[in-house]
Amino acid sequence: MEKLLDLIMTRLIASGWIGDDDREIVRYGLELMLMKALVTAAMLVIAFATHMVSEFIVFILLYPPLRRCCGGYHARSRIACVIFSVMLFAALIAAVKLLPESLAGYTSFFMLSAGTAVIIALAPVAAPEKSFDEAELRVFRMRSLAVVTLAVAAAAVLGALKLHRQMFSASFAVFFTAVLLTAGRINKMKGEIS
Image (tube, rainbow, N blue to C red):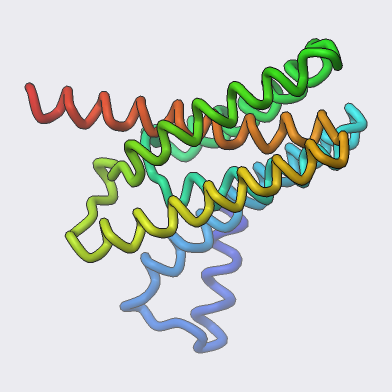
């Protein structure tokens, strides 16, 4: 990945698109974009291999906006973030494959209800790398509530259409956002105590 970033940066600088002053910030942005593209590509390959493309689409449409707006716990390194993200999607696949169809609706309802309650109670939760001032706190609070409302509506529509696996995927995205919010809040409290 470093060689690819070096090549892109060399070309951008040579073509005059960026100056020396912007080098670090552009490289950081490119690195984030490449990591997100790699994670999405890995998940897509897994989705095709397991015949879960529609579940992947629901998850990838809901989970990143929820995480972006709600905040919460973040991995300490980009590699850990990639591994966690792929493992989370693998957990979704395993849960969908192992959960009996008769329990999918009930489990989805529980995860969606619990996750939504936690998001309403806690969001947004700042990470050590990203704190909020008062204005940002209000904006991200409203965004969090809007995105979780959208996720609940999507899950309800999927449930009404009897697309239980896709509904489970939406509920899973909400629930794990809430888990990471809770972990972020606990970490923040530990930091304030120590």
